[in-house]
Length: 160
Length: 186
Figure 1 (cartoon, rainbow over the protein chains, first blue to last red):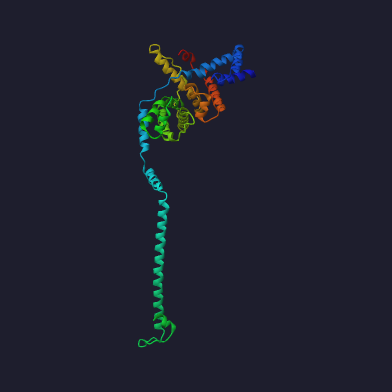
Figure 2: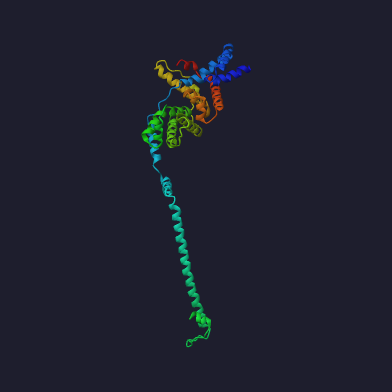
């Protein structure tokens, strides 16, 4: 019977758990009075699927549980290597303005070092070029060892 | 289980004594829910320990917008269900062994009856899947409302209703194997 199916669904949940409103309870209980099948079903649900759990004994937590929890919490609170490293980084982040300042200083030092090296290299190169040109001039004739007099050339004026 | 808000705040700041108060107020139901969902004392101990570690860690994020009790139920149910799913080593005992042996008459009846009843509950829960078991435990053993169950299990009320219905139908189908007359005498 369709009606019975509907009532059985209610018996399995809302009725047995006390969630039906007064009108719904009245309709269902009126049906139970006239339907022996649903009435038997209700008793069966109550006795076999609900009551055994209502009478279930609450077990006390084992004595060692608190000690185990306390120990685990203490262990968790001791930082490991990875956590130390992260905490160290976090410590740096406490002074967030220092980080860009330090980075700028490092960059400036690096840039300064590179410029100085380049300047020194340029000067050394200039000297080398000059020496090379002088040697060319000396080797190119007119530059005998006894001829130290000026030839009046512009290159001579520049180097000598 | 009522815990003053200041205790929760102190516990969330790492005060050991306050956390012990939280433990004392919640360990009973945490252990029992864990025990009934994983259906095994050894595993329940492990789950309960994990639950309290999570509570300790997450307490600082608890906003007091929902009930603390429901929050702990939620952590417990989730942890226990996940544990049961991962391990799926519920030590199921056949009915023939566990429930077809009524207490011997020459022994202390009350204690034997209780033991028998406890084995019956274990066996019945062992026949349900994790989600159904959690629903039955929260509703019929812990007495939570559908609304509290929905929050604790993060499901809607219709799903609560549906899981309870399926669980109870399954339990009805086992009735041939169980000596309920014996159980009813308690």
